[in-house]
Image (cartoon, rainbow, N blue to C red; front, side, top):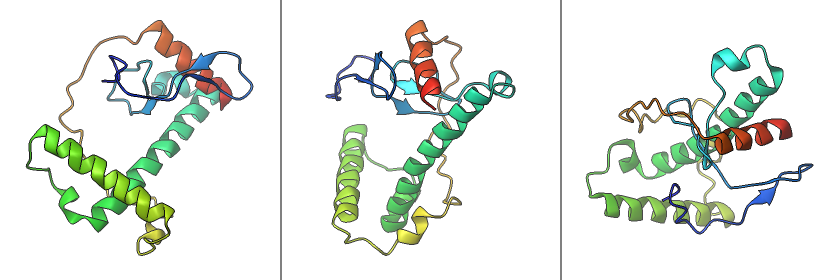
Length: 155
């Protein structure tokens, strides 16, 4: 749906101090191909001698950790998330969306304080939900590299 631009996302915006607009992006790791809608870290060989790229990778990792921590909290609250959902894809999508809405509701209303300590813990269980993602040898588009560079300049 991201590839076909079917999500109702906010319009492209300029990053602070920059004139060009960029789209909203997802955060991925090295297993994914860089694309205009998905940012991934720079490869180690590129970033090890470039402080800006290393900083980008660090900040991207930190942003991803927020999502992982949120999912860890939800999984501790709703234990069935620790195992694969044995439902069809459409039902799984509805379950996950409902849990995200419920999670956000509980957090914004300060109803859910039982798992507050987990937000500080960086040792949350590592969920290996994407173990079976096939490798791809596709190169990213020039536009995707431009977006990555703009975000890198911001950091």
